[in-house]
Length: 158
Image (cartoon, rainbow, N blue to C red; front, side):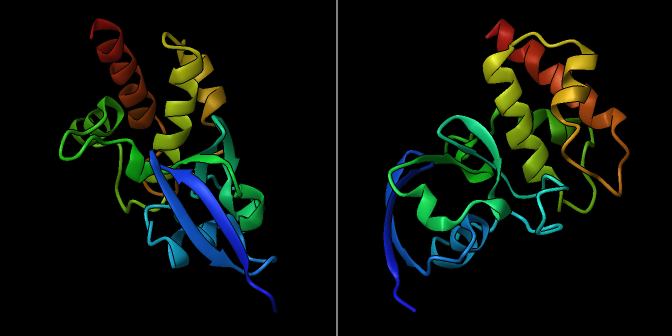
């Protein structure tokens, strides 16, 4: 099968990779680019573990073909932090124990960032609605919701 050359801005850096036409963005990010923070939970777009921002829109990377990302701007969980300085969402997830096994955490973080980028002061209901596409089998959701609320408050103060 013929490989396709893809150039994207990923986490602020221009990245080039080769991929086959039928490879998902999830697999290209993990296997070709080395960004293993993007997780595969279901492969059908139902769990949110592979959430990325693609041109500032939340997407399930398992449902996007990698060649569709040519020329796109992509943000993965690895792009949230600034070197060793964690994003407030990441810090609040850690401090609030809003994670256990970690499979769902990157997707929750990216989905929460998408929400806070559009709505910096969401209600609890708005947070729950925005994160409804992300499934967690370990923690339940209360700690996750509180972590997003705490991060939103910190980001407003900054």
